Every structure is written in C-alpha cells, then in structure tokens.
Amino acid sequence: MNTKAMDINKLLVEFYERFSAWEHHIVEGSGLPLPMMHTLELLGLYGPMRMTDLAEKLCISTGTLTVRVDKLASDGLVDRIANPQDRRSLLISLTKHGHQLFKEHDLAHLEMTQTLTGDLSADDKATLQRLLGLLTEKFDTLT
Image (cartoon, rainbow, N blue to C red; front, side, top):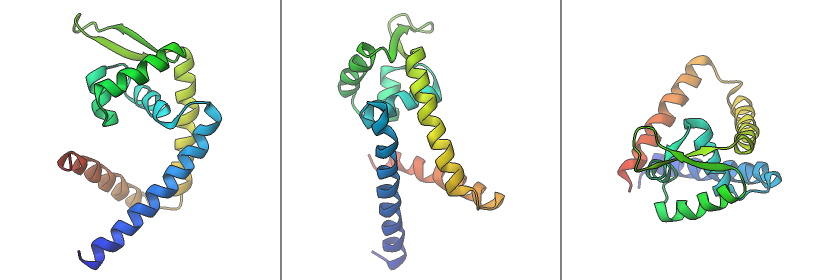
C-alpha cells in the first residue's frame, strides 16, 4: 500500500472514531441506542420508506430491521402505514414523538457540521460535499 493511501486511511479512521464518539455522546441522553436513532434519522431525512429500502439505506438485513422497527413501534416512535403505491407493502413512518427525536438529533448534526466546516471557504465546502458524495457512492462497490 502506498504512503498516500496509508495517510488517508489513518485520517479516515481517526475521523470515524471522533465522529462515532461524538455521536454516542449526543445520543446517550435520548434513551435510544445509536442504531435506533439512525433508523429515525433516515426516516426523518427521507420520509416514509418501505422496509426493504430502509434496510438498504441502513446496510442491514430486513430481519434485523424488523426487530428494530418492532421496538420503535412499541415505543411509539414509528408507525407502519399502508403504501398508497402498493397495497402489498407497508411504509415505515415517524410518529410525532419520533419526528421530535429526529429533529433534536438532526439539529445536533447541523450544529456539528457548521462547527466543523464554518472556517472553510465556499469552494472547500463544495469540494468536501462532492468528495463525500463520491466516497459514499463507492461503498456500493465494496459489498
């Protein structure tokens, strides 16, 4: 492996560890485990979704997601609603309480993003956005 790849790898690992520690700290006051909050987060960002689509976005199996959604539904954070485009499937959507938890978590993410990128130029922010998008797309080639 070349030195540049090793340097980037080290930075990615360090960024992930810091981001993960920050995320755990933010979520611990919500009473929800981080995977549950991530489920609410995706539903808040993208709206109601079919189980298969949500599982794909979370990179987990539908079986794992079913257990998670069952718990979130019993806690009053998500609902299973009829899919108007396909009567055979259900959509998972946030309840009012689930949406409130999402908004609080999303606000913390926005504040963190503004803190981390506040000193960057508009060009640097655009480059960061473009590169994050490219890296995110590349994950599909890893699995």
